[in-house]
Length: 388
Image (cartoon, rainbow, N blue to C red; front, side):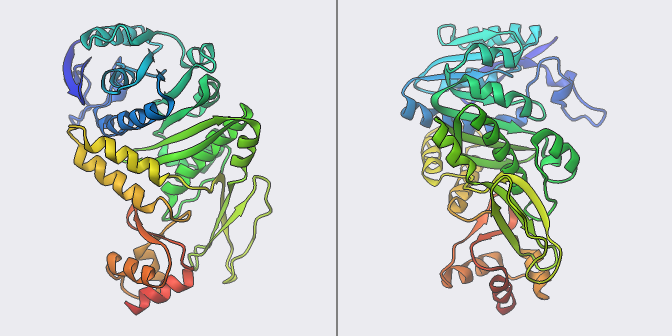
């Protein structure tokens, strides 16, 4: 295997030569490599570094685990770029990956901080029960089969980070696959990616309650081909029970765009909308906040002091997340609103200003360039659209 060296953040990494793993169209395909490394995830990894840095201020000493490491870039960057990381366990079941991880550890002079492993990810997590206060599950595909082991590895308080690249099932393209993997029905509507993120959060929380852990989202974002979610973990049966109280269903009316929230895993769902049309249901899913504003502002503060190549784009995303953090579940698409109101879509900034002038919450959303998050009633929003 031929390799090359790249720099990411403040870390040097040896990776498989991308020129050896290209499709017929000439695009680099990480899935073809013998040791996984996706350069397109640098954006996500940069944000993760700031999340771990903020977490280190809460938990003092960070014990981190990257159990699906590939070349080891995540876990090695945490050890290299975060002040307060006491130990980073970096694991991959592949022998080739294990050799490359060890070389990358030496390259960055991190032998005292990084523990390289080569075993099944779930075994590593189960062997370290209660040890880690930051666990990062970043698989190729669904994280579902690693969640229970990740929960067992979490210390009494910590952060669980997950990536899901199976966005199509979560967003409603393959509902049977979503039901099989996550035990929830998705919804293919204008806010389908938010539904997918909420299904992922709800699934993780239901698994967490089996371990008597509450898992509260502090940052969630949908970027390119993946969902990324960070959850604050606290052990305790009562906390876990309280988390379940915010699990429920969304009922959507495709005729008038109304949406209803019903809390409870075994809740009785309405069949028809106020307008008389049939409702379509999605869930169970997390109906609480996906983003904690204060945490996100802390991530922005840390990231703003770093010299990352994609810093401008990363801060733009986090700023949008902070803006929408205190809004309600689901959002409206500007074009869908205008079509339902029988008019042309106004400027999105003008509609947001109008909604706010009426005393309601209104913001853009990172889930969609044409999305508006607001707690105003559907009929009222459509009247405002018509009046602009």
